[in-house]
Image (cartoon, rainbow, N blue to C red; front, side, top):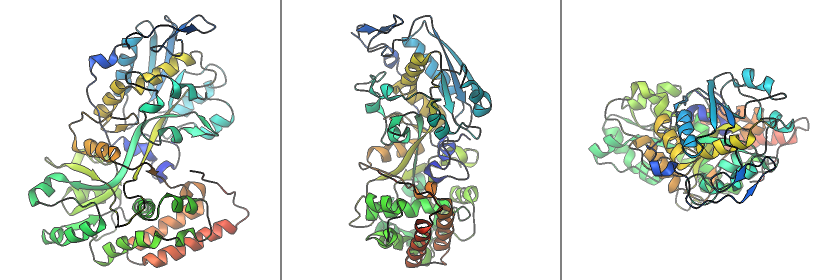
Amino acid sequence: MSVTPENLGDLNRRTLLQRAAAAGLLATPVAGLLSACAGSEPTKSDDTGAAKSKDNPFGVKDGSAVKVVIFNGGLGDQWAKEDKVVFNAKHPNITVNMSSTQKIKTEEQPKMATQPSDLVMNSGADMMDRSTLINEGAIEPLDDLLTAPAWDSEGSVADSLLPGTVGDGTQNGKFYVVNVAYTVWGNWYNAALFKKEGWQAPTTWDEFFALAPKIKAKGMAPYVHDAVHGYYPRWGLMASIWKTAGKQVVVDIDNLKENAWKADGVLKALEPWEKLVKDRLLLPGKLDHTQSQQAWLDGKAAFIQVGTWLKNEMSATIPPGFELTLSDYWSNADDKAPKDVFAASGEGFVVPSKAPNKEAAKEFLRAILSKAGSAKFAELTKSLASTKGSGDNVQDSALASANTLMKNGGSELISVKFQDFYADLDKESQNLSEELMAGRLTAQQFVDKMQAAADKVAKDSSIKKQTRTA
């Protein structure tokens, strides 16, 4: 599987889009999307004499070549080969030299100070450290890519991207990393089973608790989750806190604000999870990620909470007719942000500062982020792309449901940072999340212990403090 920046989305076992490779959405590109925009006349030239236009905003020279390196992990590399087709449909006289590898750091970092590749997909276990690349000036700011016209849609490239994509690629006030894949988290169910039984997928905790007895009557547990890796249940707990208490409370938690864990809404957000455990609605057993996912596929539980890598990760054992369908984390009445979705981008491309053809690298990124390119990405990887609408034409329940969830989401994306900022607090929150979901802690005890753990970090002058601003 592929890997994104360390701990993004709080995946310690594998990073965010290692697993987004499992999501997926792609449609077949339409020939019209590959054609040049009509009426785009050259307006000016750069110092090399290359003409700039709406179809060539960076002034890429005919007859030039661009070297593109793809990480060939869980997403494979066929989608990138399709982007080459998209690119050359508009720029037939530019040569794309594309290669694939899993050894990004080993093969590409030594070249960064001399003559690097033009465009590098910095992903996988052997990825280059993003902060080091930025701090050493080794990669190019790409803010001009964001303001460039979108490849085959109206508006700018930035206008074409899903929420959070620009922020995920921004550091020190500049945009450096173009993430091309998108992961969404929530509660999964088998739509075919629900149709057969006449069940309506719940959107609130009250609806879930009303449905749970009907599920149990069929010999199934209403819910299952990974009970071995503590960051799995933590996703659901933190999503609930955001939805119920609102974004600012989570920002305060990330910033170690005094009594942030005791803010209004936090306890209310966690009490349904406590009830789920107390009412014995969880499948018994200390199952890990794949064991819990397989139990769900085997019909032992109705719901499981996990990200959109699920289909790819379990592709070999999905039963015929099983309709993997993603629904949002359930909300309470009077929640402050019930429609906000837990999602983030990953699988990042960078342009080395010393790349010989940075203009063509940026132009190739425009092609990757095109409607045609992103649709093919979704089709081939079964994962959402970071371009809006990548899954619109996909006949796949998992991908289509993730796409619908994003389209119907609120104005903000749920995100949590404290586990990335502080290793000790990360570990303690995982342990406490496991304890709560095992029934060994009440919601109130969880809150009290998390506040104590946060206070300990806040008072430790030896720990460098991080600040979340948004």
